[in-house]
Image 1: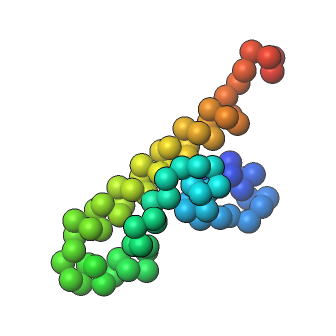
Image 2: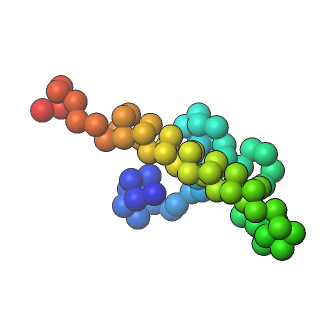
Length: 79
């Protein structure tokens, strides 16, 4: 998030926003979002919560790799 907000100089956007903008599969695409986790927990839906969290982790890793490769990698022609 620090890189995507230029270290706090711009407003932060959600993981979902950045995934959609940069062409990464949106982890919120199946209809579950953070507002539903309490109800899922109360109903013992632990596997659904784990899947929700895993999708966020995978999307975050893909986003990091993409940003690092496109925008943060040092290239020979920059030297």
